Length: 320
Image (cartoon, rainbow, N blue to C red; front, side, top):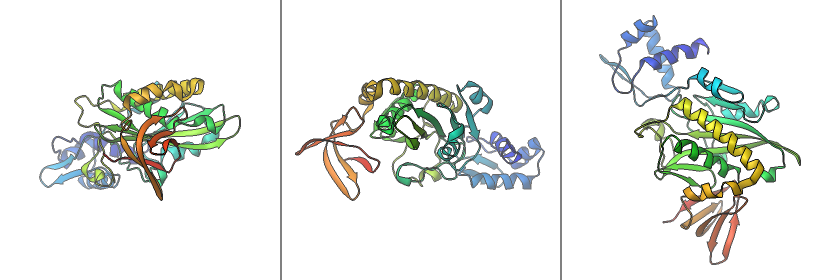
């Protein structure tokens, strides 16, 4: 860790979201000047951290921030773990180092300057607030055998969170995880290379842990996070658990395909047997969601019968 982030992490460790801490106390504890503390505080704000500053009181975090215990994470993950305070995006890092990676290698960052979601959307990535991770996997088959993989990853995230006692989870086809009816997490899978014998891909995911009001205002849909739970999962332990389940589920997917996950998907499918609208720009189609098929395509029933829909440009909206 460079000095740039060492100091900032020390200052963050001195702050609290429940009460104010004076700048003088922080400066004395870290042997820094008040001016240096102010400069670091201003810099932290540029990374999406909302910090209240009140003259005579000091500084206070708007909401909790949880940082990874790097040594515990790296030593607990089965495989290589790349951990950064900041990067452009974890997916981009992994895609840039494909030749050096083995299945299960994972990249985790506290901040992404260019985090991405599906269809080129920006993924809001304030420092220390959420989970941003990407895992490399090599399938010993062609790309057609990766069909439905985003559904598998959704099931993995749900299981990981449920193991920490999180309730009210659901899945929205093809790759969104919801908590109490609002989006909690998302998945972005990118193919690096595919041939008839092998497919190399990066599984990116983001999970909202503690969203500030200012960052939440930048998101164009209702969202949820884990901050209101009675027992919020420890970030490092959640990442370790998530990595274990992802590896096990991907190995199962290679052996048995999507059929091994249909029961888990159906148990938390938020839209099954509901009237929905599929948006396939510039067109749309209405019908009743009848779940998924063996390739992970959405089954939609209307007057024309039951049809199968799959593809990156499809989104799902409930009509009632």
